[in-house]
Length: 290
Image (cartoon, rainbow, N blue to C red; front, side, top):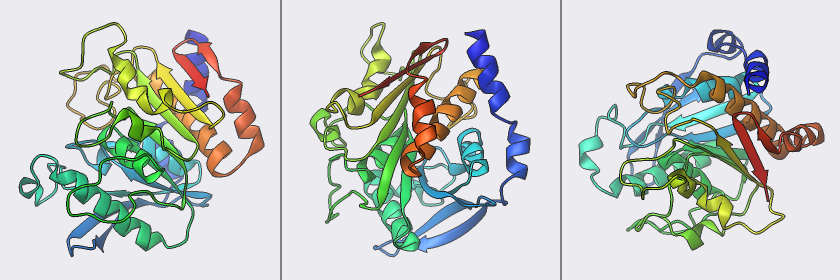
């Protein structure tokens, strides 16, 4: 385990170095179909190779994901991330109780897709945002009340989903996950258990529902990280979560995600070969494909 973690840390530069390889982030305002302003943070790679649409977790913000986003930008991906209405930093968050943010999240991503035009893109997200990403990639989530038209984005070529929710009534069913139509990397950890989850040694397994229902031969990957919880020890989503930060496992997750992005979003054969060489159990990493 120590050898694999050490190699991953060596391969993943510090966040300070990664930040120096990317242009500073900027914030732009888009307008949704309902006339609501959607604030989007954009990070631009110095030499762009691809575009990622990123959706943050519930009650979080794009600015709490440097540990994921900065390495992607350093690897050549522009990242666009809306601040959704359920974020405490959003000025109108109290106006969107219950499931109301689900519709607003889809509206945010539609406005972003319109802004990008015909540019190919990757959908990525964490937790609630991972459901958004999987939906953009073809999963049949529940259509929010008052919203019409397909929820997927036909220009999404791949999905990276960190800890997507298990099937939840009103959001997505197990069968809904089965319609996912693009190559996908799904991450979870052996401590990734949220309050209210059924007890059991593998209670984290629900985060892999979209992987479990996929048929073989569809380029689906499941990345399970030993000892990782929902927040990587406060490294993403909710920085006030108790640590210690799970830096070694984050380095592995970033490494695997970049191989996946290069292999399936950019179509690089060497990246796919390197990714498949990591299949199986190697220290903290358990990587599967179907």
